[in-house]
Length: 341
Image (cartoon, rainbow, N blue to C red; front, side, top):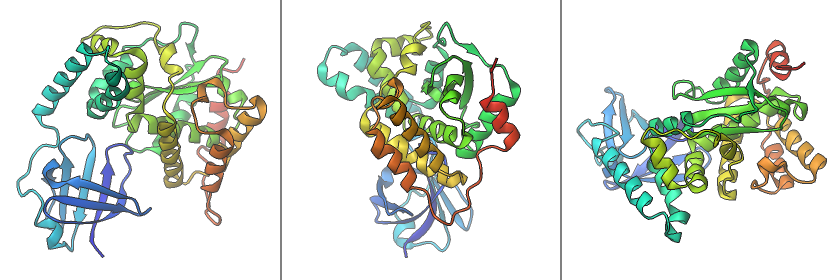
């Protein structure tokens, strides 16, 4: 049967029931979907637990947790570190500083341009990424919708999709701009343009789009895309305390790789399922974009093919499942009517 446990992968902050096997050097973590993930035991630290539980963290991944519960499998437990430690060592920050310095000095190298963004993003502490997100001004013509009811409704959607997002510093802003757009800035700072509500009149569909943006942050796609698009020199400037106005326009239109978009869609589908929100309205919204514009709007032009993408969300809907709306009628009305003249 294997060792039972719960796993947080440090990307999507939701627990997954898993079985764990392996020997003294590596653990094999198998989730409910049949996916298998290998981790070296030398990368693990014991961070707590009691007589019926062992809690482990990862030296290199923020938020990574593996909680093993009794009965224990000696083949697994005996190979784990015995002493407690800290998941984030002080050496990691020094390593990260050296990595960024090295990358900044070599920005002219073609290989670095291709491969460094992902390497930097994977190792960048989320606190640094939040600092980067705060350094960018919003588009100059974008006014905030200061509607407390609408803001509360947006926050309620995030709380349903990712209960740990608020704790991890995620924020969401509603802008009064006639553009069908939503985007994630670095560090969990997300924005929604109320022009999107002219195209999407269902809070469940909006939840699917917000889930996609949350996934980009959790997967560190935003940080990697920022390094790739703005350049390593800009990143180093911002980490040093500089500020660059107006570049949020570039980040709003940030293009991710197709693999990253597919990952974000898969995570969004999983988030909707865990939250009990139907994926059908999201599928219908994407089909609407395709029908109205022939392809995706400009902000979606790096995503997988529209027809296949809508079908993927639709296929994830489970027959016989009683889904719950993302918002109640009052919340939905407040949000979808926000900033309306």
